[in-house]
Image 1 (spheres, protein in one colour):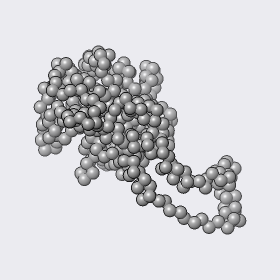
Image 2 (cartoon, protein in one colour):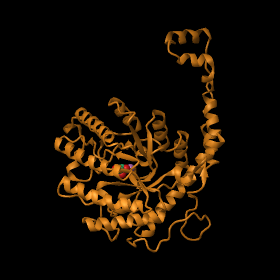
Image 3 (cartoon, helix red, strand yellow):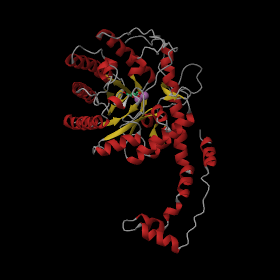
Image 4 (tube, protein in one colour):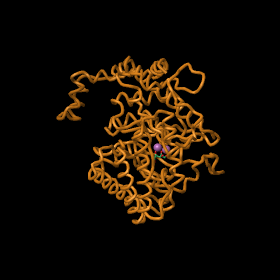
Length: 434
Ligand code: XLS
Ligand code: NI
Ligand code: NI
């Protein structure tokens, strides 16, 4: 054990405690017939809390962690010790990682794979020894300069092949560790300028790559879900997996809509000009909802600042859509979030997560109550009630034509009268729960 968090006691649910405690997250509490920890399925992101050094465009490392710069296997092991000590203090059921977060890259593909496997052995022992499970694994195909023009969409076929080798290793490790999902975030799958880009060819390559990933998943018997994480920009100006709708179009073009789902990040939804709940509801409607990254942006700077959730009403509306669609299956709530660079202390890392877990718990409970009391749904149903009538249903049946509907509308002398959408009334209703 690393001892990095030695002054911090394991977090417990104690709403009235003076010191650090969960105020709302009680893993044992049953909500809608299910334990809260099974609803929320929290995961810590290894990269932000144990990989990120606190740099920004104007300055480097601010965090003074004993495992930095983690460029040797010994330091990588020290980092793993600290990470698993942290997971235990928080009592989270899951974590997530990229290959790049957990081991220094080797000089060759083979050396990188060996190092990844050595770290996975360490993880496996720690997981068996009461540690959390793996919500998802993923490959970092964006940090190294070789990926500056993309991974699967790189104009250089050697990068495509290198990326394939890397994803194979990461899928193998995810499978071995019992990961419940595998994520592909297309960090640099996009472009800066059309002047040097064959967009159509790049999209074809991305489709082939994804198809091969899916084939490989089946070949090794990985039972988890393959997830694409949409994001509209940053790092590339034009990102191919812009939002849920774009990803669905891409999946159906390649016949993969039954194979691949989405991991929706709140901050990415906002960057795409959507609300988080819109993206979740759309994914549910299209049958591709998988998991969420629960981290918000700074709404003034308009960039992907990966902050911990801190707004119960927002979170409640997101979980409302998650619950309405039946809740998570293999997915969960990953905090793809980092503390601010001035938050230097071990305690800051713990309290950032604990506070976020409380915010999510409050959001979940509000969402569950809204669903249970059925008032929002009742209002929605009332708005569409006309479609329950026989003549309305008949309009949608095969065989009905534009002509026949038009003639009937004329015969009946239709003159539809608008009805209030009652937005403010519904907003007031939601505010009674949050
Ligand atoms: C970056 C993404 C990334 C993915 C995993 O914006 O959110 O962290 O979640 O590669
Ligand atoms: Ni992100
Ligand atoms: Ni993310």
